[in-house]
Structures are given as C-alpha cells and as structure tokens.
Length: 47
Image 1 (cartoon, rainbow, N blue to C red):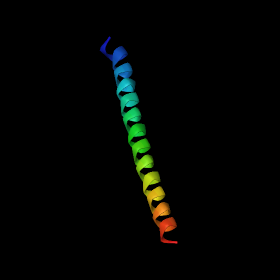
Image 2 (cartoon, helix red, strand yellow):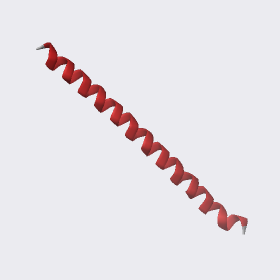
Image 3 (cartoon, rainbow, N blue to C red):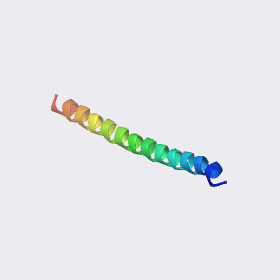
C-alpha cells in the first residue's frame, strides 16, 4: 500500500518544484527584459 501511494506523492512534489522553477525563470526573464529595456532607453536618451 505504501508503495502504491508513494509515486503519486513524488510526482506531486516534482510538479510543485517544476512550477516554482518556472515562476523563478519567469521572474528572471522579466528582470532581464526590464534591464534590457532600461539599457535601450538610456542609449536613446544619450543620442
């Protein structure tokens, strides 16, 4: 019985971790994009 419900618990944990990782990547991407935008606007102002 314990063996039967163990995989489900494992996959649940993996799902949560994958979701957390995805959110982290999204945040990182947002940050990188805003950094790029900031650099671009700074360059535009210099002209």
